[in-house]
Length: 437
View 1: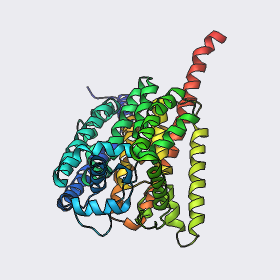
View 2: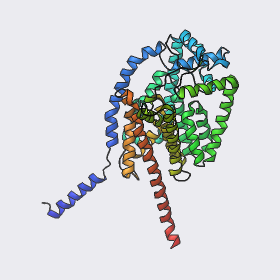
View 3: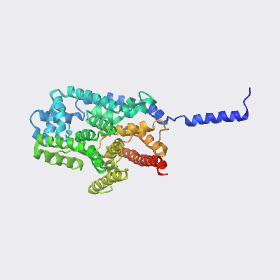
View 4: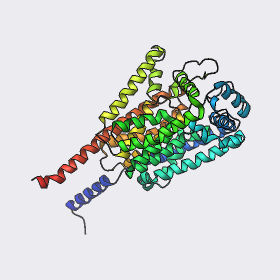
């Protein structure tokens, strides 16, 4: 029986409605298209870098020697740059300039067991440990990536492997993946309202104090007292342990080393004299230095950096709705800490996997609850941040521009916090309306 004109119109409308209701997977398609390219580039990077790392030309050399110094009873000289240089050239490989160990002393305890091995064996052992820690981070964050798993089972794992800062941390034998695991576990605990334990885990990460301290400060300003208490419970003992290990005099050397390297100033005899490449920092410091170097005196650049970083922290603290949800607060705090961190190398960006994974999980379908323009932008920026670290190969002298999408991502997260708070308040008002009337 032939279909009438009205029947044709109805079927057309039904088809249009189905198309409109069908979820869009632009983010998924983009990620599935770009991840194979990222993985291929990283594979080529491993082929070229891995032999050099085995010969001793990796960041692991500083951590290895720090463990050796503690094991051999020279702990009161842990920050002696002359000793670090001598041992790195003797135990690892000869180099013009040693990599300085300028972390809290308690972290060197982790590398004491590795110092019993020859450097090559120690590097491979720590690489294996880092792979296990990365898998643990993935497993801990797995409940936060259910929508990513629904989009494609291999997508979450591909994000972890395809994110260049993670690959670089593995190659260099860096400790950034340890902090990634601590923050991932803290996020899961905050979901369960176990703030004290979450704060405790973040406090253990004080070896990356440039990232951890802004997180702790924001949680304090947000009046999340239980998280702050947990942070103090772990941060105070590890700080005291560092003091016991090396003594007060060596702690002063540590502070001076931080200042000389942080300010890119030459140290005196026996102290650290290490050039710091500020332009490869994807944070406010790198951005301000890259734009103002040669145009403003060095002191003015330092003051401007500190002032803008403090204002950014205040902006995030005050612009966030009062006492935000714990997990959302940590996502915001991690992103803000990356922006204001005074030291931030490419491998340190590994911690961005936490806010990236959470945001992508929320907006991967494009039709998620409360998506809107802010959601679309946040989802798009989180996908862009997966790719952005690869720009170090294209614009190595201008890598600080990667801080711009991170800043935009932070702005979108803040906007989403306000939208979620407004929607929640509106929902509560609707629930109370019948009672009031």
